[in-house]
Structures are given as C-alpha cells and as structure tokens.
Amino acid sequence: MTRIVSGFAGSLTLQVPKSGTRPTSDRVREAIFSSLDARDAVHGARVLDLYAGSGALGLEAASRGAASVVLVEKSAAAAQVCRRNAAALTAAAAAARRTPPAIEVRATPVQTYLNGAAGPFDVVFLDPPYDLGDAELHVVLRSLVPLLPDDAVLCLERSARTAEPALPDGLTLERRKDYGETAVFWLTRDPA
Image 1 (spheres, rainbow, N blue to C red):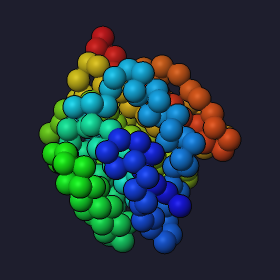
Image 2 (cartoon, one colour; image 1 turned 45 degrees about the vertical axis):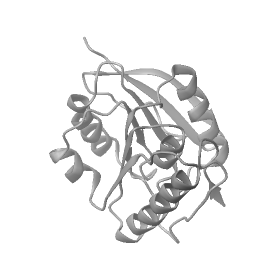
Image 3 (cartoon, helix red, strand yellow; image 1 turned 60 degrees about the vertical axis):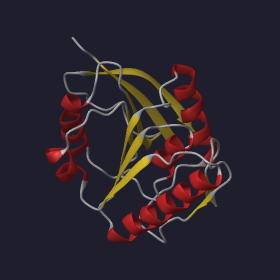
Image 4 (tube, rainbow, N blue to C red; image 1 turned 30 degrees about the horizontal axis):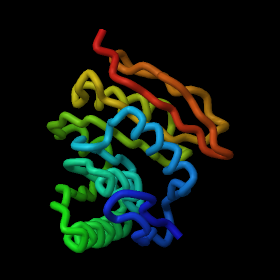
C-alpha cells in the first residue's frame, strides 16, 4: 500500500497502477523528503515528477507545501491513476481548509514533454524504469538543464547495481545514497 507520508494529506492512501510501474517505497520517500526538508526545498516549490507512476513523489511534495506539481507519465492507465490520486489530494486539501496546489497530469513520454516544457522547476523527481538506457537518461537530463534555476535539486532513482549516471554540462552529482535495491542520486544545478 502506498500512502502520503506527511503534510496536509498525511496517511492518504494512493492508488497504484496494476502493472508497469515500480512505486518508490515509503522508506525511500521518507528519506528523500527528509533531505529536501533539511534544504527547505519543497515549500512553495515548482515540482516536476518524471516517470510519475502513481504520482506518489510529486503528490507528497504537494502535501508538504509545493506550489505546483506536474506529473509526467506516458502510460495512459498510470496517468489516469495519477489523476485520481491528484483529485484525492485536492479533496484532502479542501478538508484541511488548505488552498490546493496546482497539479497537472501529462500523459505523454518524458522527452516529448520536456521538448515543449517552459519551466522553471525547483525540484525534479526522476524515477525511470531501471532498464532505461544511459544514453536516453543523458538526453533527458540534458533537456532538463535549461528548465532549472541555479538552486534546483534533482532526485534520480536507479537500481543500486547501476553506475553513476553520465551527467551533461550544467548538472553536478552531489551525493549517492543506497536503500537496498534502490540508489538515489542527488543532482544539483551547476551555474558554471
């Protein structure tokens, strides 16, 4: 079962697509958001969740005070789950007498979305399928660079068995943290 960990929608149960996705575990999400909270990176942020699956990462950010969230998922079925989860989170905001964050769901391939995206995005989550090739990941990361302000932070999930990703100019690897089979790479915008 996947649920929102904290914020105005804490404990809200999220639907998960029947197949084709690998939801981020609660343990990993808690660690990611603990790190983001330490940076005060979420409140008021413009968040982009690529390869969104159920939308759990982006919606967790929304529950914790992000100003806007874009969930990008190419699977039509998974995008529909994202829409239902976003509606549940919006209802939770109303019940908590909070202004709901702007949440947009885009049912399109990640690269197609990035080719027309305007940005800027303060926080970006990337949780691609583990079998996504390094070359394709590099193109996605390169496409993100012009959409990021100098203080942007990116959180990339990969298999713990994979090497560090090759980064395009404009991104720097800050650190890597492994959680069992999941590796989380923290990337920052390199203004130089």
